[in-house]
Image 1 (cartoon, rainbow, N blue to C red):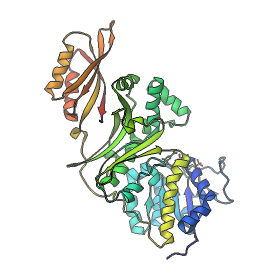
Image 2 (image 1 turned 30 degrees about the horizontal axis):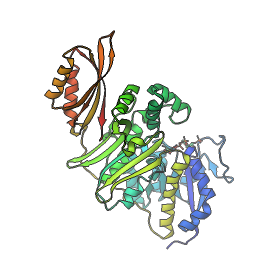
Image 3 (image 1 turned 120 degrees about the vertical axis):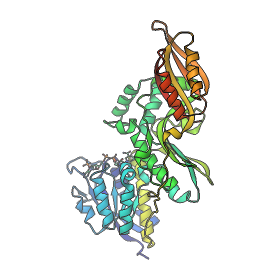
Image 4 (image 1 turned 45 degrees about the vertical axis):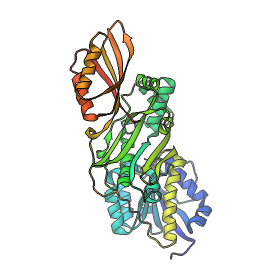
Length: 433
Ligand SMILES: NC(=O)c1ccc[n+]([C@@H]2O[C@H](COP(=O)([O-])OP(=O)(O)OC[C@H]3O[C@@H](n4cnc5c(N)ncnc54)[C@H](OP(=O)(O)O)[C@@H]3O)[C@@H](O)[C@H]2O)c1
């Protein structure tokens, strides 16, 4: 057994939003953490890019450095916390740390989702370990429950709102009746959206996270490329208004399901009945529902981002490693992120759909539209005529379908687009009841 209360060196790569909260907490709660883990966690070095930048917290002298070797080549440092972000050089640094036998804790979803298997392989070969609770949904326990608490289960599905920026935008579009672009600008000025919002708004950020969750849940590699990804930029205030009139909220959902012939993993805007728990998650909040065969449905909800919330998850991993080292265990996770399995395409999906069509305001058009759906085996549950533009002789139709296959719906939309009286299929949103 290792000596209890011996020092355990920690090196931090990055001291921005998350790193600052991690450093402040490691220093401020050193005594509690020592009692809890049996190790004195010492923050030896913090690596940043710009040494002249004003920092929110004061570190002991000589702690701050712009030389990554101060951490990677430092034999006193056993745990490296990477909170720089991006693929490169963060990935290079993590590889070097793992190869040197150091344990790594990261909040980097993009890196874990894209390069996780390679990193875990390096860790395995070198007796080091890689921990990534903070890579998904900030403070919400998303990784540990799957690796530990729910290990006895077969996970059937994971459904989540795991991108705070898009949830903030959709919530504000509803509450203020504002257009997507205007809410996005407001979110950027408040710091809820990045200056380049593509990753959030087009669903890539959520895709990285659900790829990680699905890999763990189904014990098979799910890469971000396997995730069917559609963002929220085409959602218009009208869609939100009509959905609300029909008793639904629109959310950017990330959904991973294990089906008989493989798993289906997707991120897209979704109509959710307004009384369901996920429909009530507003603003920058996140929520994750896990359905285990033994546990039944579980819902976790809370802060999905922010310095302190993410530091909560980062430090939980640091403490896990420290505890394991204190009792002489190797802190190895069997991540299950490298197995193989079939990944299904969207064509296999069967669900209900919301469609918004612009058609000529003329008798016979509705019957023609209904014929197309009938021909393609898509059964219509309800049709609403929402708006009539008398001058242009056009009307807006909202159609809710019964369950239909995505393939049939696509064929129906293709046929509709051939009808001269159908001017546009303005939106198609999947419904989860
Ligand atoms: N912010 C959140 O709410 C949140 C939530 C969950 C996960 N995460 C993840 O946490 C990670 C960090 O996010 P953040 O928001 O804290 O980022 P951030 O505020 O931009 O901070 C990045 C830090 O890394 C340093 N850095 C960047 N490139 C570097 C390089 N080449 N060499 C040395 N230092 C470098 C920066 O140094 P300077 O200070 O000198 O510029 C800065 O201190 C990302 O992977 C992110 O996806 C963030």
